[in-house]
Amino acid sequence: MFIDISTSRPDTPADQAAPARRPHDDAPDTAALFQRLAAAGDGPERAAVRDELVSAWLPMAHRIAGRFRDRGESLEDLRQVAALGLVKAIDRFDPDRGAFESYAVPTITGEVKRHFRDRMWALRVPRRVQELRNKVRVARRELTQNPGSPEPSVAAIAAHAGLTQEEVNAGMEAIDSFSTLSLDAELSAGGDGYSLADSLGASDSSYDTVVDRESAKEGLRRLPERERAILYMRFFEDMTQSRIADRLGISQMHVSRLISRSCARVRDEVLAERANRPGDGRPRPTTGPTP
Image 1 (spheres, rainbow, N blue to C red):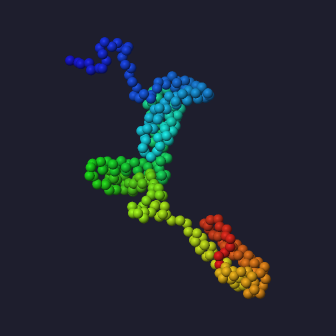
Image 2: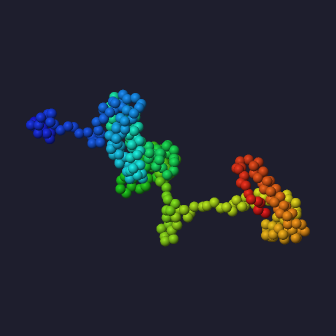
């Protein structure tokens, strides 16, 4: 005996039966619009039909974007990416090859996934390394899915995923590269905790002083003895030009000219040596040698 288990009543006419519902309420019937889009040439009419199709299918794009919420990206940005995928799907769709929804869903989903792959990494890594990361992540999840399972070793992950241990190490490093710590992150739990920024080094300007001093030594040695004495008294003994002139029995103007000429000579020799040195960068101008 066959039993009719349909929900329709026996006395319901066939033409009054409830219409078959689409998989989603945001899948409008736009077949006629796509035919108009395919027939229209470039111009205002095509742009108007295209805009109408985008408006009609935008709720579906937003629904697909909602599947990827809570993954580190704002919902508004995800909707923008999904809308871009929708526009690409509309432009590429051939209405003679089936329903638009079956073509648009993978197109939009792929656009959102590419956004996560290419835009959401804190450190940019090659696509091959991203694929290794996904394989390692899946293998770790499968190996630890049973309660109480220990953390798998690199060798176990490699055997499970069909990778080498070097590839597993690269994938594990990529897992840590997807997101980074803030410079304000606390590195110790005590009351005197310090942030990550406190542990970073900074450029020390004293190194430049050491480089300049060592560069000027040879030039200073080649100066005449009186000029070396003048520079020593001026920069090391902090004597004024008047006192130096009195000690040497010359005019203050003469002392000033000797200091300027000596500094210029040493500076020119240092810059010429740096310019002729292979692999050296552009010489940094200095205000004067440090005796």
